[in-house]
Image (cartoon, rainbow, N blue to C red; front, top):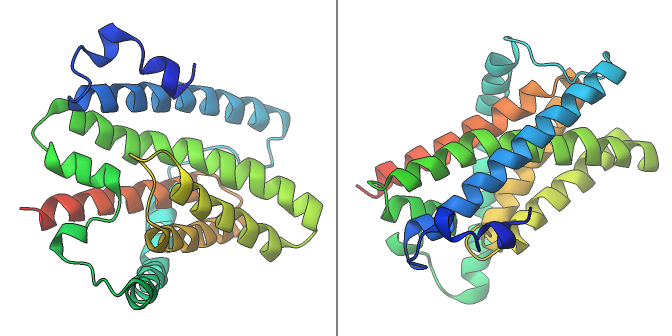
Length: 223
């Protein structure tokens, strides 16, 4: 079931196309279904290859948080540099209205008291990391490693695709290119963490913590 088909289910999205529910419900349902499918695939892959590092352990979240703390300065610096370049090219310095670069974050901030906004937060913080880390780190990066036969080349290409996808997605979820640079560098750090630890829970924890940090900062900045 695609996002477009889910958005046509009237009892789910409601009758008002301008309401937050019309945007949030398809996204939340899509992430829930995708996360269930992804977890199933990871479990099957783990059973077939128990030494592939696809199991989840209690140690993964603290390791992921620690690695995010170490990599966060480089991730944020890359975003700042990209934004400076964008400003020099467009002659438009971002103001307070542009401070929240991601349109999905802005949608959450603008509707912070709506229960559907919190459902979106749950999808962004919990669903997206599971699905995206399985797709980009476990499967894509592993395939690239076989094809390119070079660990860093596979990490770089997977991270570049990861950032690009976040820049060219649907209008309500796509980031501007300078914010996508930051996402790509985050992907680079998560890819390196996955290859180093061989534990899928580590990049998932890094991704979830980064998304939670972004949501928290957006809500705090907009008070």
